[in-house]
Length: 185
Ligand SMILES: Nc1ncnc2c1ncn2[C@@H]1O[C@H](COP(=O)(O)OP(=O)(O)OP(=O)(O)O)[C@@H](O)[C@H]1O
Image (cartoon, rainbow, N blue to C red; front, top):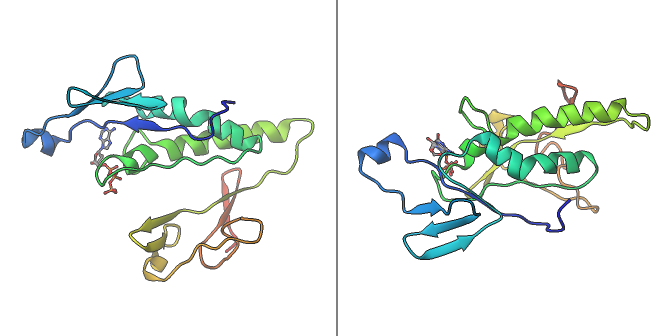
């Protein structure tokens, strides 16, 4: 695995139909064959990965995320997060409401394949997968696995070992085991 702990990818989304209609123009472009982005004609920014408007969800997943799923199953901590201004494509990239699916779909698919492989190996241990799904919007925390709580005050707490999520019932945590989802909240 790479020695670098934090890697940054930039993704330029295509113009939306309404932007084309309003004659908006793209002002950034990926320098071909590089991980650099040119803003205007002379401002160059370097990243670990740079994806242009034609990049697919698979391109992003396979270059930036897939190896982290493997690492997580091998016992490493891994975090992937999207950051950007409103409308820049964070939800799209993660997988919200588009037929191609996104990172979350691909992570879930590969995670269970890897977990299943692991449980078949000779030194197999019991593997459990937990999932929580929350959104921090402005200063409000929303539990996306229990929409009726959307207007409740929710908190994230850490225990003495730095683990989050033990503060149930604040945030729902579901135990997921081989595609069977059981409520343990
Ligand atoms: N790579 C892409 N290819 C095609 N359409 C995209 C792409 N990225 C984003 N879009 C479209 O751009 C619009 C805005 O994207 P999205 O909702 O993902 O932004 P966001 O960063 O999550 O915004 P917000 O912070 O407001 O929730 C959506 O209509 C989405 O379908």
